[in-house]
Length: 308
Image (cartoon, rainbow, N blue to C red):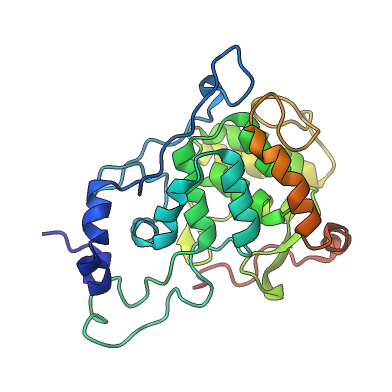
C-alpha cells in the first residue's frame, strides 16, 4: 500500500479533492486549441517537445516536477480554478498579477518541521506549500506551448517573473536538453533584475538566473533534472568561452529568430497582445527595475539546500 503524503490531510480527503485528483490529475486543465495550418495563431506543429515522464501514482505527465510538489499543486484550489483559463494570453495575464516569486514552494514553508498526529509521517513534516509560480508552470505545461509562445515568455517586457517561468518551463520540461543552450544563450547578458523568492536577499538578473539554471541542480529546496554529462560539459565549455569573449555561434534561440519581443509568427492568441498594454499601464516602473539590474547579487543566495 503506497501512502501518498497528501492523503494524511483530512481536510482534502473529506472534501473530495483527493478523489477528484484521482479522477482527473489535470484538474480540468486541457491543451490549448491550435489554429489550422493556414490560419494565424498557435500551430500544433510548432509545439515545444516536452519530457514524457509520468508520475507513479496517477500515470499522468509529471514534467520533471518533484512528486510531492506536484501532488500538492494538484490538491490546491488555485490549480483547479486555472481550468477556466483556456488561452495562453489569459494565463500570462494571471502570472503577471499573481506571481511575485518563482521558488517551488511558498517562501518560508518548505523544510519546517511540524508537530501533531501526522508529524511523524514521512514527507509531511517538511512538505511545505506549493508556490504559485510552479502552479502556473504546470498549467503552461498542460497547455503545451509553441516555440513562439515560449519565446514570448522569455522576452516579455512587463514582468521578469513571466520571463523566469519561461526559463523554468524549458529547464524542467524540455525533451531534448541539447537545445537548452540555444534557448538560453541569448540572455546571458540580460540585466533585468528580480527577486527569486520575493525578497532582496535573492536579488539576481535574468542573465545570472539562466546561467545558474544551466549549472546548478539545487533550486530552493528542490532538485532540477540532471543534465546529460555530455550536455553539461558542453555548456560549461561554452560558458567559459562566453566569459572570455569567445563565441562560436550567433545569438539565437532554438526554433529560429532572435530579436524582437512579444508574440511573433502567430504563436500567441489575440488576447496576449491586447492585455500587454493593460499590463504596461498597471505595472510598476520597469525602467527603475532595469536600471538597477547590474548591481544584482550573483546567483541565488542560499539556494543550495535552502528551504525557500
